[in-house]
Image 1 (cartoon, rainbow, N blue to C red):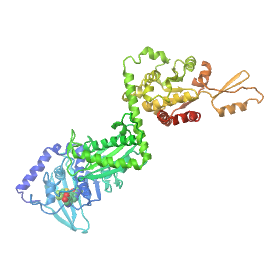
Image 2 (image 1 turned 180 degrees about the vertical axis):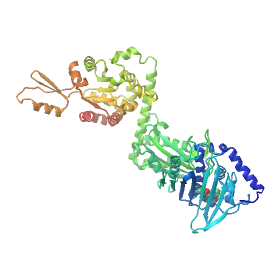
Image 3 (image 1 turned 90 degrees about the horizontal axis):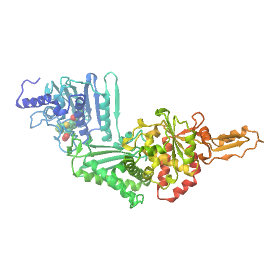
Image 4 (image 1 turned 45 degrees about the vertical axis):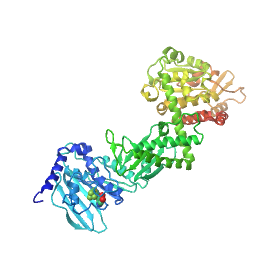
Length: 637
Ligand code: 1YM
């Protein structure tokens, strides 16, 4: 123990005492979160050393008793004397507030708010702390107790291999400060350490838990944020195989961006500056987003995918389904905003824009297939956005779906218990009439769709949504649409599409499935959508009439008949050919009918067909009609 305290010692201890009096001022809270903050303060020093290029390995160990050890293989803290304090540099780092951070100058500092005062704050809030520095063949050691009081001065306690360098800090959080808990959560530490490994490619970070359930994880990502994006998209359907990676540096500010699109509607953009999450975004994120929107629009225009009179793609359009990591390293970051997690440096906006736009432009030019997929995704988002806007306007307009009009179209069922109710969406008035007569009116509702309004190949989705029958469907479902969608309000357990097996029928199915896919996907995902399977053939022999579903069933049935029986087999064209009883028997009766459940894949396939049909090219439409027979089979098989 030191014999006497001199003036500067007393000042130092007053500084640490201030931290102990008001820990919240330095680490935010003394809850579990504040406890983990101690680890980050020490780890940040090691990461800084890695950023400076001197450290490849960091190890964090949760010892028995919730003692934490952080070890790195950097240069080791400087072991000389600090002229200002007259103390060793190491003692200064651990006992003087505001010491540390900018000592060496140069390089990037991880300055998440404490600006390098971290080590002394951790010391102040610990029951005890030990530091070991391996440098110049010596092992230097100092121990502090009771909130930062040095037990002795810095001493060489051992020799080591002269090649070995590094710093090891071990501490025990003070339970009189951290009254709620001093128990570390493995997952909390693992999540952030893995994030640090993603953000600093090539840096190996090991986490070890030596408490009851021993655990160990090693995080090393040579691909850095590319692997971060891969992880985020792991359970998503991606629309292009490779993660796109762009990097660049201007005025000592470096920027890395990695992204990949998936089939989701939402976007996940995570930005960081000096390894700190900038939840509120800031100039780096603004620059990248601005460049993304501009470059994608330019590419789409230059390649005539976007026509002159088309609305430009918005930021939301080009970000639909985007998973992106933005990592900026800045020598002097300014953090702003409510939670100080928004990068404020104005110069970064242009640098981020420059770096990302040139990288993205190059990627699009060199990878036309990927480019096409990305542009198509944005175009679909744009169409859906316009259509949804229209739909909202229409469904919100007063009196637009007044009740008499609504019930005039829908023959609803009597039961109000959704679990037993079904709605048949039927093509054509005459089939609709038969269905109304042939139904079980307790549980089966019928909505006939009329005439040519459903000329899908020319209708854009927004126009289809303007169509009264379609809006009646939306109202009948009861779920609302867009932001207001609520699956629990669905009024029918089964939504059954009943259309003819011809071109018009296929068109209507494509339209309905596209509509469901884009606006009611949870209904499809939850398996509420079905296709009715009306019979394809009708066999008459003698007085008997038999309906059969398909060719196979027809062959089987014919084989059971005596060869000499006379029969004039009919291929059924429309539902309208059946009367109410026949329609009930063959297609609607719960006991006898066959339904096919529509999967999300079916709906997605329909959506793709719809996109093709909607385009300006005549060719795909012609092809659709020609290939329609196969398509109908595919969809109904
Ligand atoms: C387990 C914690 O603190 N490692 C660490 C810290 C420093 C250095 C190396 C270092 C930095 C510099 C020069 C420099 C620190 N040094 C200082 C200060 N691990 C851990 N590893 N030489 C060594 O920044 O120029 C503060 S932290 F201020 F002394 F330079």
